[in-house]
Image 1: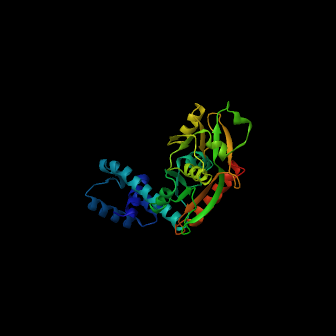
Image 2 (image 1 turned 120 degrees about the horizontal axis):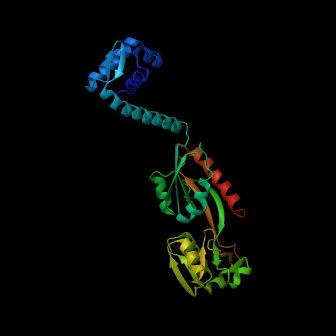
Image 3 (image 1 turned 45 degrees about the vertical axis):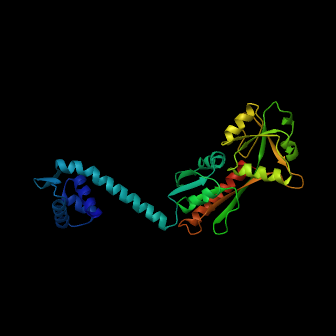
Length: 293
Protein backbone atom coordinates (compact mmCIF):
# COMPACT_ATOMS: atom_id res chain seq x y z
CA UNK A 1 0.00 0.00 0.00
CA UNK A 2 1.87 3.05 -1.25
CA UNK A 3 1.71 6.46 0.40
CA UNK A 4 1.64 8.06 -3.04
CA UNK A 5 -1.67 6.36 -3.92
CA UNK A 6 -3.06 7.32 -0.52
CA UNK A 7 -2.31 10.95 -1.30
CA UNK A 8 -4.06 10.61 -4.64
CA UNK A 9 -7.12 9.19 -2.89
CA UNK A 10 -7.23 12.10 -0.40
CA UNK A 11 -6.74 14.63 -3.22
CA UNK A 12 -9.69 13.24 -5.20
CA UNK A 13 -11.87 13.06 -2.07
CA UNK A 14 -11.14 16.70 -1.31
CA UNK A 15 -11.33 18.00 -4.91
CA UNK A 16 -14.40 16.03 -5.97
CA UNK A 17 -13.00 15.45 -9.47
CA UNK A 18 -10.11 13.57 -10.98
CA UNK A 19 -9.07 16.49 -13.16
CA UNK A 20 -8.72 18.92 -10.23
CA UNK A 21 -7.01 16.28 -8.09
CA UNK A 22 -4.57 15.50 -10.92
CA UNK A 23 -3.67 19.16 -11.13
CA UNK A 24 -3.03 19.33 -7.40
CA UNK A 25 -0.78 16.24 -7.25
CA UNK A 26 0.93 16.96 -10.60
CA UNK A 27 0.02 13.80 -12.52
CA UNK A 28 -2.09 13.31 -15.65
CA UNK A 29 -5.79 12.62 -15.27
CA UNK A 30 -5.68 9.20 -17.03
CA UNK A 31 -2.76 8.05 -14.88
CA UNK A 32 -4.53 9.11 -11.69
CA UNK A 33 -7.78 7.36 -12.66
CA UNK A 34 -5.90 4.20 -13.64
CA UNK A 35 -3.97 4.03 -10.35
CA UNK A 36 -7.05 4.65 -8.22
CA UNK A 37 -8.98 1.87 -9.96
CA UNK A 38 -6.03 -0.50 -9.48
CA UNK A 39 -5.92 0.44 -5.79
CA UNK A 40 -9.64 -0.23 -5.39
CA UNK A 41 -9.11 -3.70 -6.90
CA UNK A 42 -6.18 -4.30 -4.54
CA UNK A 43 -8.26 -3.25 -1.53
CA UNK A 44 -11.39 -4.98 -2.84
CA UNK A 45 -13.29 -1.80 -1.99
CA UNK A 46 -15.29 0.67 -4.03
CA UNK A 47 -14.01 3.98 -2.72
CA UNK A 48 -15.92 6.27 -5.11
CA UNK A 49 -19.33 6.37 -6.72
CA UNK A 50 -18.92 7.70 -10.25
CA UNK A 51 -21.81 9.92 -11.31
CA UNK A 52 -22.03 12.32 -14.27
CA UNK A 53 -18.24 12.59 -14.61
CA UNK A 54 -17.72 13.33 -10.94
CA UNK A 55 -16.47 11.16 -8.12
CA UNK A 56 -18.21 11.02 -4.78
CA UNK A 57 -16.99 9.03 -1.84
CA UNK A 58 -18.83 5.78 -1.32
CA UNK A 59 -19.92 4.73 2.16
CA UNK A 60 -16.73 2.65 2.43
CA UNK A 61 -14.67 5.55 1.10
CA UNK A 62 -16.08 7.91 3.75
CA UNK A 63 -15.09 5.50 6.51
CA UNK A 64 -11.70 4.80 4.96
CA UNK A 65 -10.75 8.47 4.43
CA UNK A 66 -9.90 9.34 8.09
CA UNK A 67 -7.83 6.15 8.35
CA UNK A 68 -5.79 7.15 5.30
CA UNK A 69 -5.38 10.71 6.57
CA UNK A 70 -4.08 9.38 9.89
CA UNK A 71 -1.54 7.16 8.10
CA UNK A 72 -0.34 10.09 5.98
CA UNK A 73 -0.06 12.34 9.03
CA UNK A 74 2.04 9.72 10.82
CA UNK A 75 4.18 9.23 7.73
CA UNK A 76 4.79 12.98 7.48
CA UNK A 77 5.74 13.08 11.17
CA UNK A 78 8.12 10.15 10.68
CA UNK A 79 9.71 11.87 7.69
CA UNK A 80 10.13 15.11 9.63
CA UNK A 81 11.69 13.21 12.54
CA UNK A 82 14.07 11.41 10.15
CA UNK A 83 15.12 14.70 8.61
CA UNK A 84 15.78 16.14 12.07
CA UNK A 85 17.80 13.09 13.05
CA UNK A 86 19.80 13.21 9.85
CA UNK A 87 20.55 16.89 10.50
CA UNK A 88 21.69 16.10 14.05
CA UNK A 89 18.73 17.84 15.69
CA UNK A 90 16.94 16.61 18.79
CA UNK A 91 13.26 15.83 18.38
CA UNK A 92 12.90 14.37 21.88
CA UNK A 93 15.18 14.68 24.91
CA UNK A 94 15.23 11.99 27.61
CA UNK A 95 17.10 13.04 30.78
CA UNK A 96 18.05 10.66 33.60
CA UNK A 97 18.81 12.11 37.02
CA UNK A 98 18.21 11.52 40.72
CA UNK A 99 14.88 12.63 42.22
CA UNK A 100 16.46 15.63 43.97
CA UNK A 101 18.24 16.77 40.79
CA UNK A 102 15.05 16.35 38.79
CA UNK A 103 13.05 18.41 41.29
CA UNK A 104 15.53 21.21 42.01
CA UNK A 105 17.47 21.50 38.75
CA UNK A 106 15.99 19.68 35.76
CA UNK A 107 12.32 20.59 36.19
CA UNK A 108 13.00 24.36 36.59
CA UNK A 109 15.36 24.17 33.61
CA UNK A 110 12.75 22.46 31.43
CA UNK A 111 10.29 25.22 32.33
CA UNK A 112 12.50 27.57 30.26
CA UNK A 113 12.07 25.48 27.08
CA UNK A 114 10.34 27.04 24.10
CA UNK A 115 8.38 25.58 21.15
CA UNK A 116 11.55 25.07 19.11
CA UNK A 117 13.20 22.95 21.82
CA UNK A 118 12.95 19.14 21.85
CA UNK A 119 10.11 17.46 23.73
CA UNK A 120 11.61 16.48 27.11
CA UNK A 121 10.97 13.41 29.23
CA UNK A 122 12.67 12.48 32.50
CA UNK A 123 13.74 9.23 34.13
CA UNK A 124 14.45 8.89 37.86
CA UNK A 125 17.88 7.30 38.14
CA UNK A 126 21.02 8.47 39.87
CA UNK A 127 24.67 7.47 39.74
CA UNK A 128 25.52 4.35 37.77
CA UNK A 129 21.84 3.70 37.12
CA UNK A 130 21.65 7.01 35.23
CA UNK A 131 24.66 6.01 33.12
CA UNK A 132 22.98 2.66 32.45
CA UNK A 133 19.97 4.58 31.14
CA UNK A 134 22.27 6.20 28.56
CA UNK A 135 23.06 2.70 27.31
CA UNK A 136 19.34 1.97 27.04
CA UNK A 137 18.24 5.06 25.15
CA UNK A 138 18.35 8.13 27.43
CA UNK A 139 19.98 11.12 25.76
CA UNK A 140 21.46 12.93 28.77
CA UNK A 141 22.31 11.93 32.34
CA UNK A 142 22.98 14.31 35.22
CA UNK A 143 25.04 12.68 37.96
CA UNK A 144 27.18 13.61 40.95
CA UNK A 145 30.11 11.24 40.50
CA UNK A 146 32.98 11.82 38.09
CA UNK A 147 31.90 10.52 34.65
CA UNK A 148 33.96 7.83 32.90
CA UNK A 149 36.34 9.21 30.29
CA UNK A 150 34.54 7.25 27.55
CA UNK A 151 31.52 9.59 27.83
CA UNK A 152 31.24 13.22 26.82
CA UNK A 153 30.52 15.40 29.83
CA UNK A 154 30.18 18.92 31.15
CA UNK A 155 30.59 20.09 34.75
CA UNK A 156 27.38 21.95 35.57
CA UNK A 157 27.76 23.26 39.09
CA UNK A 158 29.32 22.71 42.50
CA UNK A 159 26.49 22.79 45.03
CA UNK A 160 26.77 22.79 48.83
CA UNK A 161 25.72 19.89 50.99
CA UNK A 162 23.43 21.65 53.44
CA UNK A 163 22.74 21.16 57.12
CA UNK A 164 19.16 22.38 57.69
CA UNK A 165 17.82 23.51 61.06
CA UNK A 166 14.37 24.84 62.07
CA UNK A 167 13.87 28.59 62.71
CA UNK A 168 14.07 28.22 66.49
CA UNK A 169 17.44 26.42 66.43
CA UNK A 170 20.42 28.26 68.01
CA UNK A 171 22.39 27.95 64.76
CA UNK A 172 20.02 30.15 62.73
CA UNK A 173 22.24 33.18 63.37
CA UNK A 174 25.08 31.42 61.53
CA UNK A 175 25.76 30.54 57.90
CA UNK A 176 27.93 27.48 58.51
CA UNK A 177 28.66 24.69 60.96
CA UNK A 178 31.72 22.50 61.42
CA UNK A 179 31.61 18.78 60.79
CA UNK A 180 32.65 18.21 64.40
CA UNK A 181 29.68 20.23 65.70
CA UNK A 182 27.35 18.47 63.32
CA UNK A 183 28.40 15.05 64.58
CA UNK A 184 27.20 15.98 68.07
CA UNK A 185 23.62 16.52 66.83
CA UNK A 186 20.89 14.03 65.91
CA UNK A 187 21.07 13.89 62.09
CA UNK A 188 18.29 13.22 59.60
CA UNK A 189 19.98 11.68 56.57
CA UNK A 190 19.17 9.82 53.38
CA UNK A 191 19.94 6.14 53.07
CA UNK A 192 23.40 5.10 51.79
CA UNK A 193 22.22 4.70 48.19
CA UNK A 194 22.17 8.51 47.89
CA UNK A 195 25.29 10.50 46.97
CA UNK A 196 24.85 13.16 49.71
CA UNK A 197 24.74 10.43 52.37
CA UNK A 198 27.87 8.75 51.04
CA UNK A 199 29.65 12.11 50.95
CA UNK A 200 28.71 12.78 54.57
CA UNK A 201 29.73 9.29 55.69
CA UNK A 202 33.13 9.64 54.03
CA UNK A 203 33.73 13.08 55.56
CA UNK A 204 32.81 11.79 59.03
CA UNK A 205 35.04 8.73 58.59
CA UNK A 206 37.96 10.93 57.53
CA UNK A 207 37.56 12.86 60.78
CA UNK A 208 36.95 9.63 62.75
CA UNK A 209 33.62 11.00 63.89
CA UNK A 210 30.46 9.08 64.71
CA UNK A 211 27.12 10.93 64.77
CA UNK A 212 25.28 11.00 68.07
CA UNK A 213 22.11 9.71 66.38
CA UNK A 214 21.01 8.97 62.82
CA UNK A 215 17.48 9.01 61.43
CA UNK A 216 17.42 7.53 57.92
CA UNK A 217 14.81 8.13 55.23
CA UNK A 218 14.54 7.62 51.50
CA UNK A 219 13.44 11.09 50.38
CA UNK A 220 15.15 14.47 50.77
CA UNK A 221 11.91 16.40 51.22
CA UNK A 222 10.81 13.99 53.92
CA UNK A 223 14.19 14.51 55.62
CA UNK A 224 13.49 18.24 55.75
CA UNK A 225 9.96 17.61 57.00
CA UNK A 226 11.37 15.55 59.89
CA UNK A 227 13.74 18.39 60.72
CA UNK A 228 10.83 20.83 60.72
CA UNK A 229 9.15 18.42 63.17
CA UNK A 230 12.16 18.63 65.48
CA UNK A 231 13.69 15.20 64.83
CA UNK A 232 17.22 16.41 64.05
CA UNK A 233 19.42 18.33 61.60
CA UNK A 234 18.74 17.36 57.99
CA UNK A 235 21.84 16.85 55.82
CA UNK A 236 20.76 16.96 52.17
CA UNK A 237 21.65 18.71 48.94
CA UNK A 238 18.21 19.88 47.81
CA UNK A 239 16.74 23.38 48.06
CA UNK A 240 15.29 24.52 51.43
CA UNK A 241 11.69 23.82 52.39
CA UNK A 242 9.48 24.31 55.46
CA UNK A 243 11.25 27.60 56.34
CA UNK A 244 14.39 25.73 57.37
CA UNK A 245 17.68 27.58 57.75
CA UNK A 246 20.60 26.33 55.59
CA UNK A 247 24.15 26.00 56.87
CA UNK A 248 27.25 25.11 54.90
CA UNK A 249 29.28 22.26 56.39
CA UNK A 250 32.93 23.14 57.11
CA UNK A 251 35.76 20.59 57.05
CA UNK A 252 39.01 21.64 58.73
CA UNK A 253 41.70 21.98 56.10
CA UNK A 254 39.28 21.36 53.21
CA UNK A 255 36.57 23.08 51.23
CA UNK A 256 33.00 22.95 52.48
CA UNK A 257 31.18 19.72 51.74
CA UNK A 258 29.72 19.98 48.25
CA UNK A 259 28.18 18.01 45.40
CA UNK A 260 29.40 18.40 41.81
CA UNK A 261 26.82 17.96 39.07
CA UNK A 262 27.92 16.60 35.70
CA UNK A 263 25.94 16.33 32.45
CA UNK A 264 26.91 13.18 30.55
CA UNK A 265 26.07 11.91 27.05
CA UNK A 266 27.27 9.43 24.47
CA UNK A 267 29.84 11.01 22.11
CA UNK A 268 28.50 8.75 19.34
CA UNK A 269 24.94 10.08 19.73
CA UNK A 270 23.53 11.29 16.41
CA UNK A 271 22.82 14.69 18.04
CA UNK A 272 25.98 14.94 20.14
CA UNK A 273 26.49 18.57 19.12
CA UNK A 274 22.92 19.45 20.11
CA UNK A 275 23.36 17.65 23.45
CA UNK A 276 26.52 19.66 24.06
CA UNK A 277 24.47 22.82 23.49
CA UNK A 278 21.81 21.61 25.94
CA UNK A 279 24.52 20.90 28.53
CA UNK A 280 25.90 24.43 28.06
CA UNK A 281 22.43 25.89 28.55
CA UNK A 282 21.92 23.77 31.66
CA UNK A 283 25.27 24.92 33.05
CA UNK A 284 24.36 28.58 32.49
CA UNK A 285 20.98 27.94 34.12
CA UNK A 286 22.64 26.35 37.18
CA UNK A 287 25.03 29.27 37.56
CA UNK A 288 22.15 31.74 37.37
CA UNK A 289 19.98 29.75 39.81
CA UNK A 290 22.85 29.02 42.20
CA UNK A 291 25.18 32.04 41.82
CA UNK A 292 27.91 30.60 44.05
CA UNK A 293 28.07 27.34 42.10
